Structure formats: C-alpha cells, structure tokens
Length: 484
Image 1 (cartoon, helix red, strand yellow):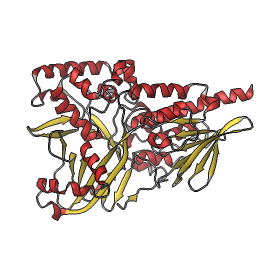
Image 2 (tube, one colour):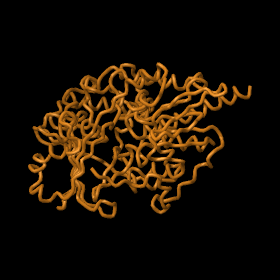
Image 3 (cartoon, one colour):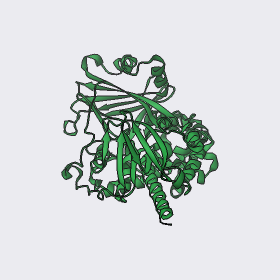
Image 4 (tube, one colour):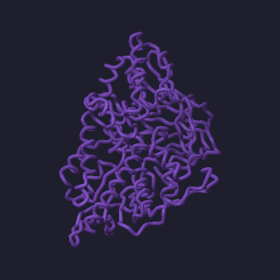
C-alpha cells in the first residue's frame, strides 16, 4: 500500500481551524535532559508536561509522522485512521490537555451512536453507550432483562469508584475482576443471551476482542462512565490533530529509530545512552519509553527483573481493515456481525462522500473478525486482505466490482493491548515499582502507553502525564541528594 501521510512535524494549525490559538508551551528548559521514545499520544503528552516543567526534552519517533495509533492516513482519495476512531468524553487527563491547548472547539460531538447487529435470527439495534433501549433486544429472556436493569444501576453507582483511564482501578472495587474473563463475568452478572447479543458483538466489532480472552477490567472501568450517556467525539481536522499540535511545540525528530537504551554511570551519576539505528547517540538524564510494550523489551539493555517480567507479559491484538472507494453514492450505514453469522467482516460501514471534510469518495469500511485476522496471518496476505472479502461484498452490494475505484488494505500488527486475566495485578505492581523513590537513583527509564493504563487513547494520554510526574519526582530527589 502506498500512503501519503499528513505532516509529521506540523506546527499548531491556524487558530481558525481549532476555534482558538493553542498557547505555546513553556520555553524549552535548561534543566535535566529527557529523551522520549515514541511520538504517540502517550509520549507527546509526557514530553509536553515535562517541557512545561522546565525540562529539556527530545522526542524520537521511528516513523515518518507523529501520532502512532492516533493519527490520519491518506492513500489517493481514501482517508482513514491509523487506529483510534473515537474519543470518549470521560478522559480527565485528555480533556485537561485539550483545554491547555485551547482545542475544545476541535471536538466534534457524535450523539447516540448505534449499529445494526446482524444475526441469523434477524437484526437488532446495539447502542455503543447503553440506555433503556437495550432492554428491547430481541431474544433476551425476562430474567436477563431484569438482571440487565440491576446491572446498569450497579455500574452507574460505581462511577465514582473506578477510573476509565486505568483498568486496574477495578481491582479496588473487586479483586476478582482481574481473574474473571469478560465472558464469565457477563454470564454471571446478566446471562448468556446478553453476552451473545449485546456485549460480544460490540467488543468484536469495535476492538477486535473476544470476550473469553479478556479479563473484565476494561468493561468494569468504562461501562460505569458510559451508562446513561449519549455523546462521543471525533476531531475536526482528523484524529491526528492533537498529536500534530503537540509536536509543533516540541523538539520531535521523526525517522529516528532507536536501537538501544543503555544505562551508564558517569562520575557517580547514572545517565542513559540512547543509540539510534543510524549510529547516532544521545545522552540523557531520563528516558520515557512510550513505544508499544511488546517492542520496548528489545530496546532496553540489562533490564531489571521487574521490567523484564512485565514486558514479557505484554500482548497486542492485530487488526485488518479494507477501505474501498466507491463511485456510487450509498446511504450511511453501520453494521456489526454477531459471532454466529457466517462473515469475515465484524464491522461494515458505509460513509457517504464528504468533500468538505476531505473525503471525496463514498467509502466502505470493512473490519475483519478476530477469526479472519488469524486467517490473514496464516495465509500471509496482509497486503491483499480484500481478496478474502470480495465475494461477501458482491452479495451485499449490486455491481460491487463496477463501482469500486480504489482499495486500501490496512494491517495494524499491534492494535490494542490485551488485558488477559492476571495482567491487571501484574501491571499494578509494576506501577508501584516505577513510582518507588528508590528508582530515582538506580533506573532512569519510565514506561508509559496504553499497555500500562487502558486500551484507549485517553488511557495512553493519562499514562504519559503520570510518567512525566515520575520523572519530575525523580529529578527532585536527585537534586536534593546532590545538594546534600
């Protein structure tokens, strides 16, 4: 696939686009030097907060553009996202960042999002933010309808006790939350029909997860903040707008692939040598590692046991999507497929052309089921996923081949971190290890990213701010030791 990328180091855009100019971050400080590896939302948030606090910050990004899985892509006349498609309103840290950047007017509300769930028994409505209408789901036994009401009340009451940006916060409510799979939790709380008709289709279609592979942490920290709500957001200017704005205020070096991170003691002071793939090297007082956790282990030389054991547990799911440019107008439509339908497509969406928004063609979004993702892996056809979908699409849309004018195959090998049963307890212990003041003198690397927080961009953002706070605390401790 040949892609045209949006600007990597774009400065903050014209104020008229965002509805207000983004205030400049504080002048680059003369304090400790921090290298941030990874220019996704986690790394850029950490870098921005550190620079605000007076640190001298350098951001290294292996790709040719910033944003990671919160970005925009264009291939010919087809535009699409690099990962994240929606912003949930409950991210306190992300909302604070938006306010600091004066980007509030860039948030575009999307209300009452729903999809038609296709099943062998007929279609029914699925709401992404559940309301009382979920009780009308066909085939739901009366006992499960009553259980669903009680469950919704319990979830709503737990809103103040769980943080949607920190999956492990569910452990404070119920330590068993990390041991139960999501499938077992929903069966016990509501019933098997609710799992099959409501929960499982949403997780497969929006996150490419199967409920029996996840712990209940994600569900139990996000649903309390979704019940009774009706609005999510996207961004004017594309999902990469926030990352581009942040990068415009930071020293970001794209195309700078890191080969290794090595700790060295110089004159009794522990520093970090960051070696690039091209042989270049940067010396730093602190490093924030904001790359995917499954890649971080290859960068850090001589990791401590806590680091090595944590990084060995990180797993991501993959995602395959085919985007079609269509010459014929089609009405807006979004469908999810239940697990028992014979389809390789979990999410099917028709998006009418919107030239003013940069989408000149009608587009079809076809996201693979988790099983089809595994099929693509087995066949090794990540560059031509569309060959698996053509027959199904021909059956859906008359004269399909005649109207297709562009095709983009998108393969995301690391889409979202998988919080499998047991992962949450390990992650909570890892954060305690990172935040231990003893790390200030023995370990100048701090980790952040969605794998450390929540499988959401708002969680990744929150982890970046938390990582920045750890670095600042460590620097303060080091300064006091030096003065004494």
